Amino acid sequence: MNVVPRASQWGELIRPDRVHGSLYSDPAIFEAELQNIWYRIWVYVGHESEVPNANDYVVKSIGPQSVIMTRDEQGKVNLLLNRCSHRGNQVCSYDRGNARSFTCPFHSWTFANDGRLVGYAFPDGYEGQDKSKLALGRVTRVQSYRGFVFGSFAAEGPTLEEHLGGAAETIDRLVRFSPEGEVEVTAGFLKHRVKANWKFILENECDGYHPAFVHSSIFGVADSAIGKLYGGASTAVTRDYGNGHTEIDLRPEFRKRDAPMSWFGTTEERLPDYTARMKAAYGDQKAREIMIDGTPHVMIFPNLFIAEIQMFVIQPLAVDDSVQHVTALQFKGAPDMNRRLRQQTMGSVGPAGLLLADDSEMYERCHRGVLARIPEWIFLGRGERRERRDELGFKVGHVTDEIPSRGIWSHYRSLMEKP
Amino acid sequence: MLSRESSAALMGAVTAFIYKEARLQDEHAYEAWEALWTDDGIYWVPANGDDIDPEKEMSVIYDNRSRISLRIKQLLTGKRHTQTPQSRLRRLVSNIELLDEQASGDISVASNSMVFESSLRDDTIWAARNEYRLRYVDGELRMAYKKVILVNNEKALFTLSFLI
Ligand code: FES
Ligand SMILES: [Fe+2]
Image 1: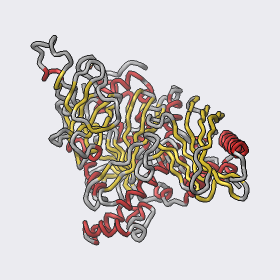
Image 2: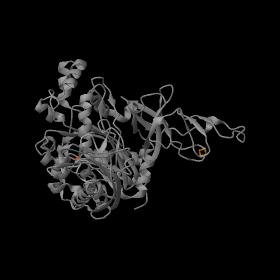
Image 3: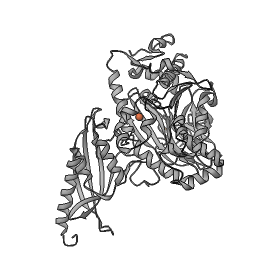
Image 4: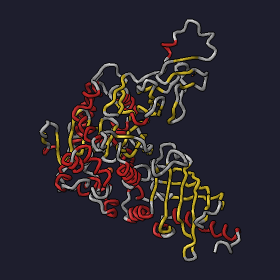
């Protein structure tokens, strides 16, 4: 199509039970998404634990843009654009480190790690310039939720809490798996690149319809109990939190099992230190409830996926090019648990992962598939007639239903229609 | 056994082993490849550099012997989608060098490899330095350790689901 629809036309591409294939493949639509989604709403950037000490930095991204997350001397977390205010050179070329300042290699301008320009080479010639107007670019608004740092390029708009809405509770549910109430992101990321549109990844994260088929090769040989969670007889649900956030809520299944740590395929006995620390932190009864329920499986729109034991960050590079940054979640104060989290994460995700390699194959084949123009539409109607509302008013359906995709697209449409 | 071998003979045996391993990988001879491993085998493909601590940081692959076996079982189901159809592969192995002998008696070897993969996505070239520890078990060389250091392991990698 190569023509961005006018606000009034998005409804022609996005209907309640189907979306037009061009939404995944049209480069003009991708450009419009950068403006209306990635460069406007709250996007997850990094975790505070990645910059634990003063002057630590780590290079992150918002879409194709390189963003330096720093902790300055005052302990404040900054999101700086990796672009010299002189002539645009990237000021930081290492993935991480500890630095009070960044000196641009081109003409040696130096910026403090809070973005201020602190000096230029050969200052004569710059008489009368106002250094304060030549700082590094900053992500306009920066806010954290429980250590998760989000940025928005829009000066005005919903607060982070408003954006997270009902999905904030899933992050609360996650951090309590640490006896100290904190997640740590310390294991380094695997970066898995796919030649596919980012929205295929976004939708797949809470698609409970595919695991029985895409992952049958591993479920069959690993004698894992995961497969059943996504079967026709499962009592697990999909949920649409609004604002594009979606969840697969597996708690009904784990509550039926009534066995602490069963969600993680293990038992309290095999993690004695961890369970002791959880009980000390939360009391026996509460710890038991937490350890039965398990961690959330939630996709925070548009790019943060918490997948029980690991965290994914989706990065779009082009209409048909995306990177999945993946790492094991680590819970503060839980070394024995963390080791298992790393081992299982390494086995399942990343370029050679026993699970994710097959998911990624599906994204790439979907992407090539939608280049064929007939039948034009992607059909998302599964479970439409059996949707219901949960006690908080969020839409829920069977774990294999397409409530998450429908929720994502209805929010997407509202973002794209905004001028 | 080792001490009686001249280094030329050892080099010959090691080279033949590495060429054979390469051929089994290229031809998806999964069971024959698995049989090359010793019972304590470790198969490691680091991410984000060459010398990370795999016990603390994420690796592309960090398989102990039982996970090697699981990986092979998955491939053998024929439903590992990213290998249906199988990648067409050919690799060149070169620069084989015997390194210092290990205290354990294992033979340390290094080589370079360049793998051409043709898959549904596209054609991809992978390049790596491989480090092995080989051991004679019942008169046959076996692999106790293989570390594959991809040249581009700091970057975002496409799916790598064949035996590297
Ligand atoms: S471009 Fe950075 S100092 Fe010139
Ligand atoms: Fe999947």
